[in-house]
Amino acid sequence: MEEGATYDALVNGGAALVYRTGGNNTKAHQAISAGSSSQTVPALSANTDAYNWFTQVRNNHGNSAAKNVLNTFVCPSSNLPKADNNGYGKSNYCCSLGSDQYWASQSPGWGNPNRDTQQNGLFRLAQDNNNHTVVALNEITDGTTKTIAVGEVGQSANVSPSQTGRTYPIWAGGNNDWASNWRIASWARVAGPTAFINNPDTGNTLNSLSWSDLSFGSRHPGGANFVFADGSVRTLQEAMDTTIYSNLANIADGNPTTIP
Image (cartoon, rainbow, N blue to C red; front, side, top):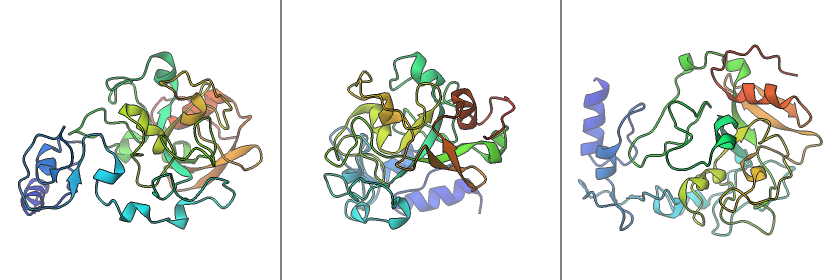
């Protein structure tokens, strides 16, 4: 059965999570009961799942399931509690949105950095309630062995044993206690000269967040672990050249890069 026919069959049958590759998800969202007053599209089925435009985990796809602690997502060296202030399971690993180039050079918002022309990581902030962006393997022209997919995260300016709300990293993503696109801090990071490994910044100049909240890091001495697009795991040192670090987060900058 072709993709389109499969999609229609699943959505019309009430399936909640049926997203086409890099496409419009409006029809899928119509099949999910409204999760907030901001969702005005009527439900097409009796599906009891909820879709909330603000992507808060309590309203999306498993309020209770997301409270499970998955040891796979917990680093043994982490000093952070295994759940956030609402009981959602922690993740010491976040997706890479790419280099910090455009995040640092402008005031990030719903429309910028643009997901198609400026975001350059293996994962993207969609900036749209009904559309998403998928990066195909053939778009990783720098090579999967030299592209960061996921990295470790730990304590930062607004994440600590006593700060488990707002931007606290959870495996289900979409922390309940923060608003706007800055909720990305609960599931993603960027990399480069501004968002370097184990960044200590506490200035809170980014809509009440700091660059440390958008930087990878860990309690391992001198660095953090990263999963690359080929599935390999490597340790990158916090003292590494930040330009090389930025290049490793960009899937297609064309710069020759040797991993230190």
